[in-house]
Length: 408
Image (tube, rainbow, N blue to C red; front, side):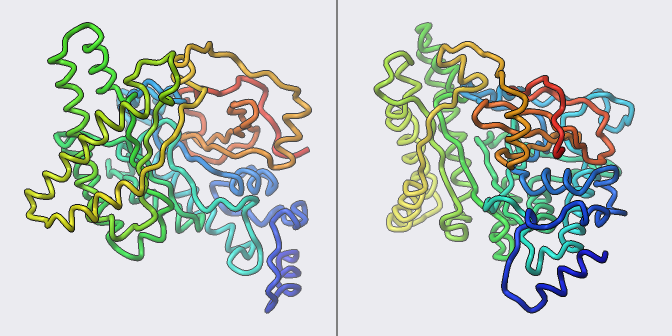
């Protein structure tokens, strides 16, 4: 393309890095020709969607059912027959659509010259989250012949296509769930290889008093059924002990790329049950998890020095978080759900000035996330996915407005 040739002649051998926003995108339009996933899109639409992409909803649904979930995540809906192309609803991105996306982005970046002097992305974010209302340990895509792909395949695709790291997040799994345990062990094998660690942004382990298992424990406690309450509390403790034990081989590989996220209300919040506070969780759950984990290490004949080193690593990786004001968390706080309203002119301004982040749904429809309004707003642009005409579950903060143009 003539315009790209002019750019390369101008900056060849130089050290100046220019932003994609500095280019004449109207002159650049057409460079995407032949890239299947971008068929029918103007380069302005493509650049806006891809360069601001923060979240990809690989799957829609989560089994954890946490009461503080800001995305109001519900269990994944399985269509009657996922092989049936005529089904109207989907709950996962197909492998072919994901591969078209990552291959297409890789091709476009190469054509523009992103490996040379052109910065393709509008922000400094080094990572993409492959989830919105799902857990990474549950992520699954289907390919030809029923072949299944998981989070490790997603990490490879994002690194190869976007040149970005992947944020991996899980609230854990039960050891008896054979498929998820095997998947977790595969993650360990994958990130044990040095060449794969660079593809990871952070491995987050979410621990909180709002998990459905602990909520059952709290319910039984409030009704005076203390034996059942203790049973479910111990189930959660055993679950998280297994999670940390499974990921232990990665601790000396990931260094600062491992994090334990501990959510809860502040201890001073008098309106919530004490069992929902950070202090109660630390004293009654987290400390027991660590003590039980130590016992498992002792069964492996680890020395007390080794055990102390591992536990110190875990403790230093703990980050405390608050509870959002969206989804079920809003109800947990006793607040009513309300629809956001705004001035449409200001909305266009937000998109035009790139003051949004982009979420890509499983069917290829992009949404602009507006932090000020806590709303997902549909964009007029659509990727050329095979499943573009399929339906997905609404996002909890999805606004049913007219689709917004990516450019005037």
